[in-house]
Image (cartoon, rainbow, N blue to C red; front, side, top):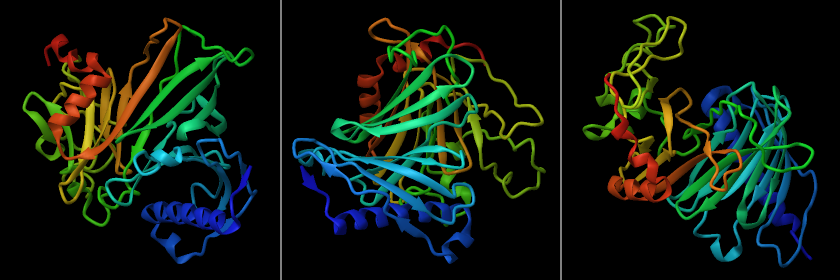
Length: 354
């Protein structure tokens, strides 16, 4: 066994709290005027042969929505540490959300997070760090006798997210016949090179993209309708800050008067949504094998509503998303998505009239 030194442990805990505080400051500017504290909950002994270092922290910070939470950190093996992203699972004790934070070595200082999940159908139970830097979440499905397992796996220039259902007694994967509607919220507000702050939000929209019949299309070049729940002259409607997008394999529709956003007239041909960095050198993208809806929303966030599809081994279904972080090369992005999700590149052949 080797001991994680107190100095190294405290430094890691402090850096984690700084990242959390910065993220909250973007939501509520008054937060930066208040001090935050880091409380070391326990020191961890790590076996020498273990390819990851696990640090469990308790972070107490003046967060209006997430006042207190616990964090589990997983790091890749030392030989891969400079190539793969480092992950952390974090859960707010007040029930306001469960997140996976991840930091990539390139671009410099790139950190991001995904809210798992924006739904009332699931209740968080636990998280754990596995070998090779993997984070695993466990949620209880409120309306069925099943638990959902989410596994985040770091890969070279990407993060793979996969979910499946298990029987709570046996731990075996099951086919429930029905599956929860998962809404993962991938947020860029903690990535300075991609975030909207401190520009007007429409400047962020200009750097977000989808793929339409015209190829890579930045969202400010798409038809965007005003937010139904806000007055037409509201600042967030001029131009519209948020929008939903449908694929060419679904007909167009309009949102109702109580909707948080409307649907664009421009449909996507590939289930890929992303953003380009401020300097134009890098891109990030969220891709799935099949989706029926993609959104660019409020928290510098991207949504790609992945469909549950049959598992490769024939037992039940799995839900998958890949988050790519790479040089700004759209053609290379398409090649990588085609390698990971071959079917995604063929869906446009099932086009229906708008």
